[in-house]
Length: 102
Image 1: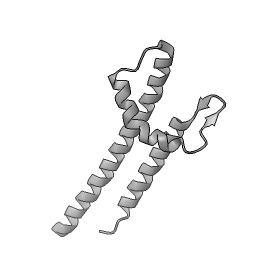
Image 2: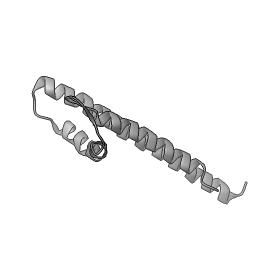
Image 3: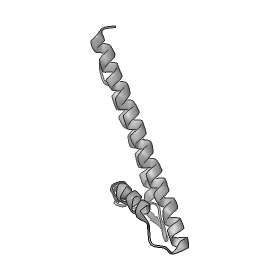
């Protein structure tokens, strides 16, 4: 293989790994936000710095999910929609990068 091809393959592998890690981080941040919302409701305390940070990080993703119909009665399903959306988007981006011509 030529050095150019190896270099391009390494960039492709880096992009795939970066997309996967970023997708997992966003997924877990949304999951932690859901857990924290249950704990805050049960404890009745104001959110701390960590909870505020998680909320700020996940607000764009949850905001997109809230544009879709997202309630069943009193239950807000926007975090669940966001989790599915992050997984689908991560998968599609990885597949796109995999099939980029080198």
